[in-house]
Every structure is written in structure tokens, then in C-alpha cells.
Image (tube, rainbow, N blue to C red):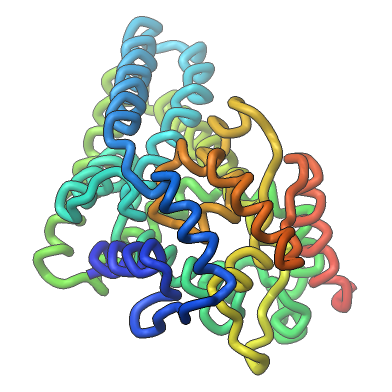
Length: 354
């Protein structure tokens, strides 16, 4: 099951291995760092922190929904699409953390958190997300193994670009300038991907996922149609999902685009090299942490995927010092520059087609 696979990989990496069946060699570059991080208790879970954050997020969601009822059938309700999108992205972050076994020690409890936040509250199939995301974590930016750099609406290497034809070729030529507008469709696309993945799930999981996904759609439609007319409800749903997709995409976009991409025919990288060289951190304070859900500490998150979100900032000095001691580059930049680098990479990929 995808959730079980995610938890298994998280356990292996937390214990200092690259994944199932590939134990980290004693004396590897990663072993001293793992020992230091574990020694400071940074791999211990922060269930209370998560419980408080989830409660605040649910209360805030309730407040926005209450505001929608108070405003009633008016176009002014469109103003609440923005805070609702922001809170939906917080919800997605909690679902992401649950999938990495950051919140609870028990897999069943973690899966319940993931199902509630992803399937029920967002209408996004957590099984699809975990299946895709665990493969990304195992081999980030590897064109043959990471689904995030596979051929899709966008491409990530000039070799992929050279194979594009027709409309896809035009899309690739212009993908840098179209990237943010395309994110406006991501909120709806996530729902579609989730329903498509149902046929790949075992029967019992499929039934539960389908029940929660359809339950989400029913509740969402009932909320909007109870509060406003069908026309306003449709516009609200489109604006809300566009803002949600944009925000969620902007949280993930700076992390790996434009970073090293391992040569499929080259030497196999160790865990430290594979995760650090392909990842980029984003500098910032509390607001950046909140807006990006801790994903701005992408290097630390990839090295220790089961590390609770509030510990990522604490682990960063240890990771930076360790990388400096062994001469390994550690990429960190401001948020605007992170987008510039990602867009520059997309532009360069499409350059031969222009």
C-alpha cells in the first residue's frame, strides 16, 4: 500500500539508509550527520505541536465558512476565496507531513490524518500523492525514476524537449512564461489525478478513497450552493481552486527545479549527495516557514523526511556545517531568486525549440 511504502522509506532513511534493501555503509558521509541530528533529539516527533496547528487550521477553516454564510449570496464572497485557498494549502502541508510519518508513530493514525486532510478536506487522493511523492524522495531529479521530472505538460531536460511535437512543442518553447498561469489549473488537476489513481488501488482502499473523495465533492458543492446562487458558486469554485493550485505550486516549485540532475548512466550517488545536490533551500523567517510549510528547508527535509517540521530549522545549522566540512555545495537563496532560477532552467530547456 502507498502509505505503508512511505512509512517504510521514512523509517529506513531515519535509521541511516538509502531505502529498502540498500543499507547506508558505516563511515559514509551521511552517518556522522545522522548521529548528530539524532543526538539532539531532532527526529523525535512533535505530536502536540501538530495537534495544536491542526486545531488552529480547522478553526480558521470554520471561521471562513462562517463568514461565507454571513455574507450570503453576494459577489463579496469571492474575497473569502483567498483565505480559504491559503488554509487549504496549510491542510495540504499537514497531509504531506502525515504521509512522511512526521506526526504520529503509528502508521494507522498517520493514515487517518492523511485521509482526513487530503481526501476529505481537499478531495485529493492521498494514496496517489504518497505513491508519487515517495518515488520522488527516493531519487530526486532523476529523469528515469523521479515522476516530478518526467514528461508531462512541462519537460525538464533538452532531450525531453527534442521529442515534443505539435502543441506540446509550442508549450515547451514557452513553458517558462506559462508556468505560473498553468499552476492556476493545478487545484483541479489534483482532484482528477486522484480519481484516476483509484483503479490502481486495492479494492478495500479504493472503496474508502472513493467514498471520501466523493464525500468531499458533495460537501463542497453543498456548501457553495447553500450559500450562493449556482453562477456565483461556480465562479467561487474556479477562483478558489486557481488560488489554491497557484499557492501550492509556488510552495513546491523552488525546491528542485534548476538543481543538479543525476546522470542515469553515471555513478550511483549516496544518500547525502543525492538529496543535497538536487535540492535548494529558501531563506526566510516565520512568514516564509508558514507560507511554504517548512518546504523551504528542502535539503533537511530530503535528508530526514520523517523529521517534524518545527525541527527542520534547528537541523539546518548542523547540515550546513557538515556539508562545509566535506566540501559539498549547499544551495540556499531568497524566494524571488529561487523562482528566477527555476524559470531560467525551464527557459533553457525550451531554448533549442525557439
